[in-house]
Length: 227
Image: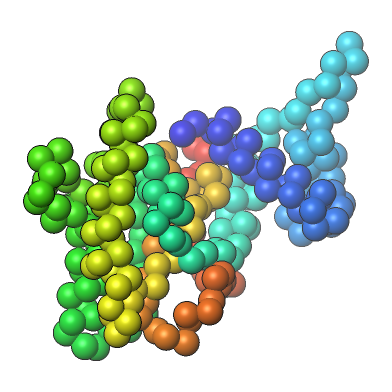
């Protein structure tokens, strides 16, 4: 991921604040301690001397200042069903998944949490299908783009059955799975990064979205633009 992709992500974030949350360019500029003109031309653009609309590229100093400030943003973590999990894991390497869990003290709960992590990253433990044998869920999702979609859907149906049996069927060990994409401008590396949270906490059964925050240190370590 290059700086242009990160800037596009940052610009879209600011546009969402402006258009959906009615936050003014001036208030953004004051909060970030960046000149209003810089933020305005970065977000909504400007016309050059020939009347052609352009968008400003941030200087490395301003870009670094902005993302360092925004690393304290909250992470909105959403409940995942099987289809959502596929979408979240698309294009992800196992090293780019940050895992977290609610406390688990029963041995069977600890084992089930580890089983799900291994299902995603190591081996789905499907032995009755030669193609799926020994594969992780990540491997199945991220195979080449020229795969036959009908064959892929058939494989997903087999995996979905295994997923339901292992992680959703038993009431006492029904796993709550939540996840979130990171903003590109807050990613530490150059590959897609995601967060997955696992829980057996029954008090969260009706929770579809929750927020993680760290207002002082921040949740993220965004890659800075080398000066």
